[in-house]
Image (cartoon, rainbow, N blue to C red; front, side, top):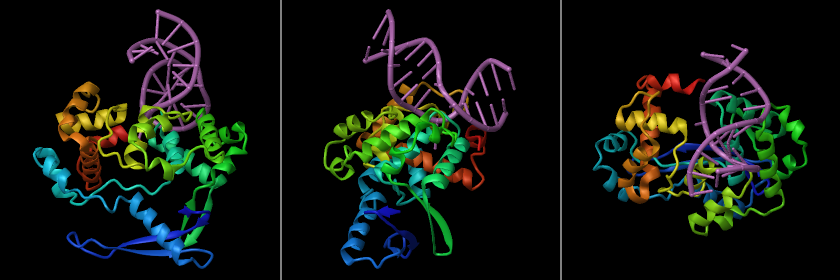
Length: 278
DNA sequence: CGGCAGGTGCGGA
DNA sequence: TCCGCACCTGCC
């Protein structure tokens, strides 16, 4: 992670129990870190990882639904957790657009290799993001050579906006979500799908669900209504279903989503494989 | 080898 | 506001 221009290696360890959760944090850095730097970083991580989120109200509402109750039992305490800054998340969101997971991974990999910074710590090597101004100065054709396709234009334009300092993430956390939505939609290459992810993952808008892209529709329709993955219900029908979770609409969808992917990981829900095309 | 994939901007109705 | 269309690339 890059925080205030410093590249930091981070290890999280489970150091508690379900009822007394604790996370032990280890940090690696080139320079000795000031106490104030570390406390600022910890505060940021607490925010990004949604550590302060109290799920009890959501659980009270969601337990009324049988499918959600099952998810809560299997994933108690689970919360949306984001590791990226707004800028970094935007880079991922753009790379995910209108393509397969496999290609998104390739695009991200090539951008990390070319512009990222590899950090070796804790006996592993991980890549940190580049700074926005680094991509602001490269040509669109140079980016296209990394096989990102027409997304090169969005990557450049978003990087330019951040390099010019016209987007202030800290400030956006303080304003109403509708204002944040308009601000991110103003960025070139951000549409309803990307804005939805950002409002939920980056700005913790737990009720942000008013658009379902094709892949999400197929998976959630199968989970909620038991449809064939290739024959999902109409988006509006699914959106209506989630209305019952009120200000936790997207969190409910997130629970169903994480649960089915976790079950796939455990060898169940094999029908997902055909959809994913890794 | 055309169609399509975890969308979006744009022009025109 | 809504709709149709083009768009990089790689795999089926």
